[in-house]
Amino acid sequence: MNVLVLNCGSSSIKYQLLNMEGEPTLLAKGLVEKIGLPVGSFTHKPEGKDKYVVEEPIKDHTAGIDLILKALVNPQHGVINALTDINAVGHRVAHGGEFFAKSVIVDADAKEKIAACCELAPLHNPANLTGIETMEKLLPGVPQVAVFDTSFHQTLPKEAYIYGLPYKYYEQYRVRRYGFHGTSHKFVAQKACNILGWNIENKKIITCHLGNGSSITAINKGKSVDTSMGFTPNAGVIMGTRTGDLDLGALLFICDKEGLNNAQANDLVNKKSGLQGVSDVSSDCRDLQAAAAAGNEKARLALDILAYDVKKYVGSYAAVLNGVDLIVFTGGIGENDDEVREQVCRNMEYMGIHFDTAANKGTRGKDKILSMSDSKVIVMSITTDEELVIATDTMNLIK
Image (cartoon, rainbow, N blue to C red; front, side):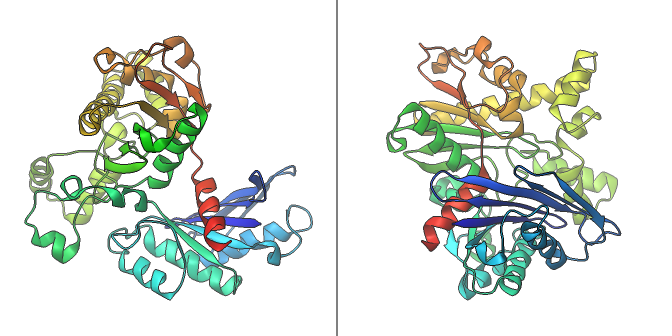
């Protein structure tokens, strides 16, 4: 069974085609960028063949998906004989609201509910829905599945997701903590348990998905019970360009001083803050580490804030879980940045963490235990694969 996985952003489409017979195999992957701009970009990487790159105007998502489908069956750089070889399509959908606690086969009802969540994720859900509707036109009759970033966190207890606002705003507008990166948190927790030979239903786990966007999740018996992102992905730890947790009074004060409207305030906390805003150097930890090594104090401060924030969430979630068996690092920073991992796990012996600095050093993109053999709490780096989760859910639902 061949599953096409699509992740449609506001001006981009990431995709993978996987053969899910037996051990999953990647056939091709690629990226459509700059949709709607004067010059778009399409990069197609078929396994075992040369990369194929096109730069031309890409009018809309329909045009972008059409490029993908044509590339997959092209005699030179294609990987399947005909579009009928695509058995199903799995879509990453940013927000499922309270409608979806698990992945679903796309039908009229699912599309209506995804559309209803557009106001909760205005940059992502409309693009996700466009991807679904485009595939209906281009591959009619091929089953589609929606996999939601938020669904894993629908098991949060009410005390973890209700804000201290008047309750009517939850009832009227469904303002609450939703959480994101759910596919990644679920995947790496289960993968780590598989490696360790554990039953996830007996374990307390804290997963740290650290990248340009970062979130921490407390998992008890395989279910998410708390997570650091909230109504939007701006809550929690400091991120590449997002503030993370912020006293709203501080934002209102700045808006008053600077005369910022809602859109400008949103832009400030989502695109101009975080590691970039504090350091005034970069949103990338690698750039910050180089700058810090050269004596840049603000770059050092930004890195220290990140490690401090993650450590603080790990500690608070250990309290929520009444202990912890496993801490997992994943995502671009979590999998590849040994400095950040060490800084988070330093001076955590009170929690039973004996961190193995030698095992940690230089570990990039590997599934590996990073704690000493006598550590009460196991620490691991685990590579995430959200596309594989989407393909697996898709296969299981349409079989």
